[in-house]
Structures are given as C-alpha cells and as structure tokens.
Image (cartoon, rainbow, N blue to C red):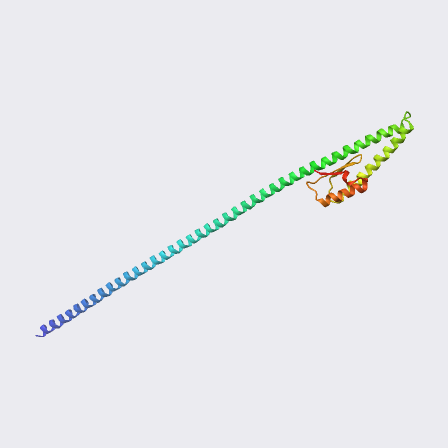
Length: 228
C-alpha cells in the first residue's frame, strides 16, 4: 500500500509538472505570436511611415523643382523681355541717331553749299571791283591820259571805294539782324540783295530795305531782295 501511494504521488507530481509545462508553453507561444504580430504591425507601420515620408519628400522635391522651374521660366521671360526691350531701345536709339546724323549731315552739306555760294560770290564781286580800280589807276598813271580822263578816273575810283565801303556796312548790319549769309550787288541805281534763308517775314524785308536805302542812298523801289 505504501508503495502504491508513493507511485500515485509521484505520478501526480509528474502530471502537475507536465500540465505546468503545457501552460507555460502555451503562454510562451501566445506571447511569441503576439510579439510577432506587434512587431509585424510595428514594422508595417514604420514601413508605411517611411513610405509616407518618402512620398512627402518626393512631393516636396517635385513642387520645389516645379517652383524652381517656374521661377527660372519667369526669370527667363523677364530677362527675354528686358533683352527685347533693350534691343528695341538700342535699335530705336541707333535709328534715331542715324536719322539725326543723316539730318545733320544734310543740313551741314546744305550749310556748306550756301556758305560756299556767298563766299565765292563775294570773292568774284570784290575781284571785279579790284579789276575796275586797277583799270582806272592805270589811266591815272599813264602819261598818255588826258586830264579829263584822269579826272573821270579819279571820280570813278572814289565812287567804287564808297560803294565798297557802303556794301560792307550794309552786309555787316544785315548780319546783326540774324542773316549771316547775305550779299549785295550794286548796278547803277539798282541794288540786289540775296539773303541765305528760305523765307523772309515782311518786317524783316522792311528792316533790310531801310538799311540799304540809308547806307547806299537808294530808293526803296530800286531795292530787290531775294532768298536762297
């Protein structure tokens, strides 16, 4: 009997130990599975978060790239607009400068031509007077000239010199009125005046007539004014 009781006790202990081991094993298995699930879920969440972050970074980069691209495009447009405006301005300035230079050249050529005309005409007129004076002086200096011829030559020389002086005074006075280019020709009682301007006002004509009439002792109706 004692032996049987001892075996029963021993068996109960073994069964108890086995049951405890099963319970422990079950618990460990549950814990492991739970941990695996938690780990798997955590890993999935982390992976999802990483994907979201990657997606967010990708979107941010894309937006930034688009912004930079848009900024670069806007800058290029602005620069192109500035370049175009600069080119237009430069072309306009070049064309304007060219037109001004051409106009100035034309005006200069016209001025030079006008200046040359008056200079040449005065030279020819003065040469004529010099030749006339020389002729009369030859009469005075000639032993073959009669006294009447010498007297007439003397009077003509005085008349020519007086006319030259009066012409010089008139031309200078007309220049002070704003007509630098002017020339006067005297032919007996008739006086011709040429003014280097396209058009004269009536009051300007009157001023020139008064100067000629006073200095050359000529009637107004004998004064002929023209423009060039």
